[in-house]
Length: 145
Image (cartoon, rainbow, N blue to C red):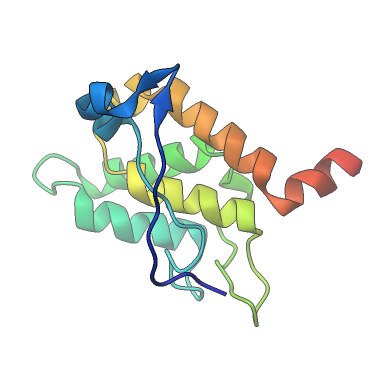
């Protein structure tokens, strides 16, 4: 079931510091990423990320080869290269796991940044990927063999 309305409240602390004090920093390094409905279920991971790259990367700066390379780089960073040609899927047609869908969503959200911004945020993205992998249902299966 998908949540479509409601209100979220609470406090955001970053290493114990209230989020209001770090507002501009937090806006640059964080984002809300949905797990479901971020991608068309009939597209593959590569097609989804390539479509976003075509929309978001400036064609005057990024050649088609550079955009394709960026897609491959993002898949590698997010640990989903082995699923590049798998369809996203949905409840009726099996595809990616929940954790893999979340990583695709992170790639869609962050994959359009310039190379410097991607590498400059490598540690942050690495932590996000670790959390996404840890919290995914398939992570438990991976740990248990």
